[in-house]
Length: 241
Image 1 (tube, rainbow, N blue to C red):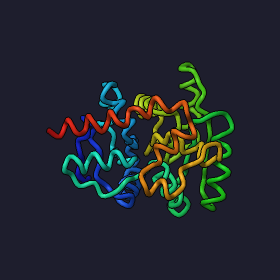
Image 2: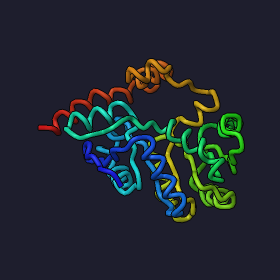
Image 3: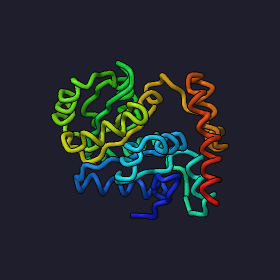
Image 4: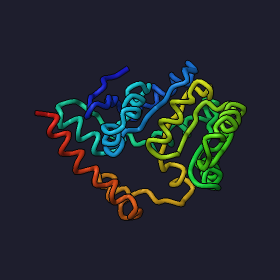
């Protein structure tokens, strides 16, 4: 285990992408039944107002720095944070390795049809990959036992859940024992991007740390959520003193 950095109460792992992948692989082999979280500034800010989410994040096996804001905050507070480990990229790296490791992946979340389209994309990108099941993210609480049963029956090594924050983290944590999956990861919009229903920021915007702005431009409904970013900067700065 590497160093954990306290950012507004959320303990984020100071890891590179390679280190994060290696840790996830170890968890899969150990069949530990763990949660991996991808913490960007928006998630951290939400956790400051949501005690349950804060508790889950700090109990997670691995919390990667998903977002330029998270990396900036760690460094601003005087801690080493080697690089951004985006949840989308982490999912791709794990899927890239899955065929050679014989690992099975389950897609859970997004709108009806999206997980199936993401499956087709994954099979094209990563020949030999076993996407052992898909299920959309539209369900009621009474549907949960049947969803758990379908996931258990598929016997995935990795469960990628795209239910949005904090629903995906809370659902995965609450049901982690019943699911019996070695590694579960909340991946937000990953399936939407893979399915082609949502674009990812161009590389130059990613390099310029402007992916948050691109998402806001594409999804005007996110504008209110983007206001969390300046509040995040102010809170981090205040926590330094």
